[in-house]
Image 1 (cartoon, helix red, strand yellow):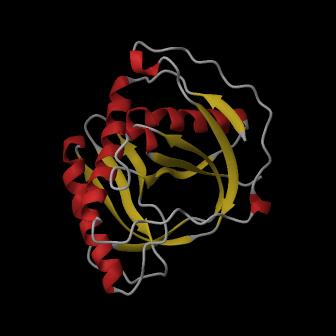
Image 2 (image 1 turned 90 degrees about the vertical axis):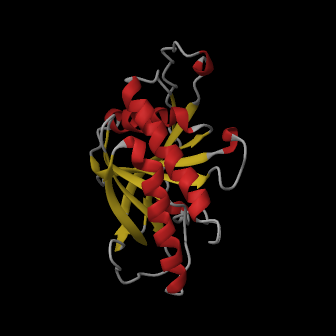
Length: 227
């Protein structure tokens, strides 16, 4: 794994949207999923697929004008090969101020449907972002499930792709989640990799499970080309 220090949060508009997206996902899921079993952590691939740690010095921080970000975290960026996983998801296109309502609506539909089909959630709920900005967010909101299910209305039965990924884990407030994305993208650029598809935030621990923001845990995943 390569250790990378987060850089300052710029541009501000992009960060505010990333924070709003993540917070909306976790908050709405904690309410909508109250009657569902808590999502399990994503299953790990065999250890043989993991790449060994890389002895690369951390990139120095550039600082910030925000007093709460004087000591940016250091991210360990690693790779592994994941298997395809069945999911139920909905693609939505909304303004940022509609995210909370939309995420609650989507999770409020997914979890009861999964239970009705005799299946169970098999991983952390996620958002895979095709676009995010100050005026529009396009995101696939979904939940990994124990078996492939038939589609129903807006609920699409699909898979999270198999293949190599670059990933890191962000622990703490969603306010600075963009830093984790920046760290993974720097690793990808430094190692000459190409991104395949769109990045996903997997909300492993959030407001529905713990009360302290410092304990939130989000896995940031980018699928990359093989080799």
